Image (cartoon, rainbow, N blue to C red; front, side, top):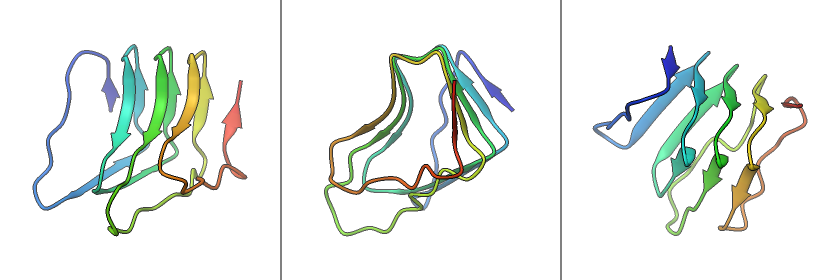
Length: 92
């Protein structure tokens, strides 16, 4: 799945993004008090690739498993103090 010109709404507070390419956005994915799981994704050519802004106590999958970050202004923006595990991510 390639997201270049539209956004997704989810019901039930869960968004799974397996193998997606997200590019050309101001913010590729904004995690705001909901569960988002992105793995084997490419975040490219956006101002911010992955923005974490979790205020509440909701759980989140903070692992970047197999994700690639390329040509973003900022790859991961973390405003909530929950550091993502980027040990399996690729930064180029």
